[in-house]
Image (tube, rainbow, N blue to C red):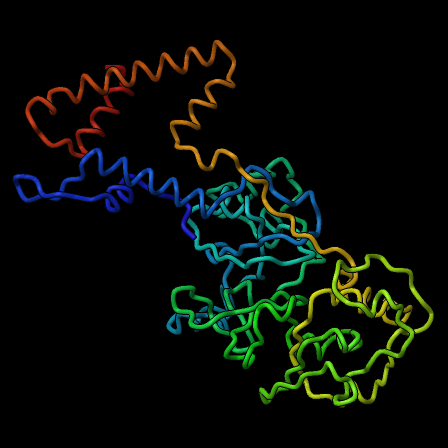
Length: 402
């Protein structure tokens, strides 16, 4: 993601026409049209405000980004084979940052989108993600915290996503090269290719997906009442419907579930009281004997996660409390001005300024506008093309007070 656009970039995107000498010339109308198009694109790509870092909000679920300019992957994650020999010498720890820091602190860097991750605190400006020395080596949005560079967010969890790699195939994500679809695991937040999973059910038939790695790692996921799962998919790609619990090794309901929970659907019951008796039959030997499989969970599945003392102990120890509680995403605050042009935004800002400062600003703008018109008038009357050097000369004259 590039956040810096120069005048040359704008000119290159505007429609050009040849002048009498055969040189490509960009008209003022074309330039302004390209500027308006860029403003519309920016409003779509960056719809939220980016003036506040999320660091003070602690470990939250939020959209994350990684900077491959400020961090360097080890050789196993290098895309350029020629540089892989020295990669391990330059390698750094992975790091993630919030939406605002990706724009304010890392403009012009090679920034990749990690999408949504939970229980993560912004690393920008900390020990893991210091900016280059020429930028002050500190987060631009929390520069007052002089001790931040010595700290590290010890509860953050990192994986290959922070180097741009996804799925069990460990492939670097290039949006324009992707074929098929990718779906996100609700537990680990990694993304998987449909071709690597196998045949997928219809999107309308399930609410959340859990990858086979998470199912293997966390047995509590296999304790979910099987009547409210959609599919179990074994490694060889064969689909096995597990709604009929007797036809699989997945534990079925023990009959101790309440009638309300057996109905399924609806909103999950949050922070349910713990019971000393497990709601589901826990046949550990049968569970461990199963081949790893992917889970596609039907709507309302959170109502059917067991919250007995033993299950909750496992849930809390593995930081899986989001399985039984709300799991909201902290999104950037919507910027109501993103749909405005630069001119409209400037005028609105002018109206909020102190009256004296507003008058001074308006006077300076009027003076600059008048001087520019006078400077360009001879070009207009003679039909001469205004070149970059002419504009540079004008602004040099303004600086010198001529």
